[in-house]
Length: 284
Ligand code: 13P
Image 1 (cartoon, rainbow, N blue to C red):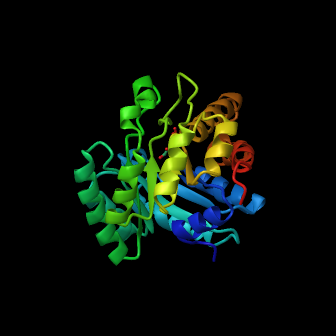
Image 2: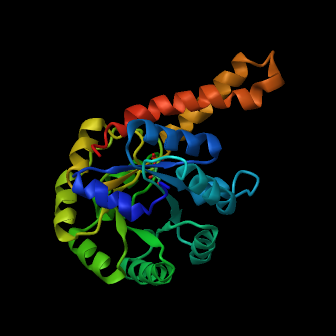
Image 3: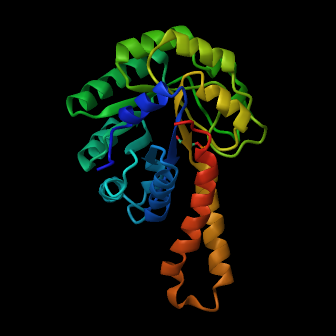
């Protein structure tokens, strides 16, 4: 029974002065690879579902995804947690909780701070009453294809605001804007580690780093000792999945009989090799 709450894993990360790893998954191939890599390395892991990856119910749904991950998690010894990534829709969050998600993210980062605070608190009160945890976002972690999102320090998280925001909302973790952004970077990011240290000093709430694809390892290693306890990766993991599927299909197009099922093996091997390397960054 290794299915645990995100907070159990974040506490372990905090104790070890490092970050837990969290991966955006879309199906069995991705979720199974993450859980198997964690078991092999004996490191806890967080499996995340991003609502944008289930806007068409033929792709996947929270109701299909949650029990699949819980079932796979309970087959291994290493702690595995389940998290619903970015949503700013309270009704969607309520439905995800009903499907079995024990951790959700309410993302009010596009709103003025007071509105973000008010909405986050409302989601926290609702979720906590159901035993579910909430990650919030303060500041704006934008998109890597827009360099302004990455460099605009006006949108970075303010340590003073973080102190009040975490205290008043009661959120279980908070995503901070310190120079990372979602997607493939045009320019190598430079994390504002001084600001990270100030945010970490201002609040005891575990800090989350989004936009994990493409941040240099030396910056991550430092950030993981400065209060980042959850590290989100999506783009490069899913990009590798796509690349491996395309290559396998191309190489086997003249022998299509078992292609769909057989493909799982090389695909999961490639994902596991990537995960093995990425997860070494976590010192748990
Ligand atoms: P990337 O897709 O840039 O790795 O970011 C993932 C993320 O932050 C998910 O919340």
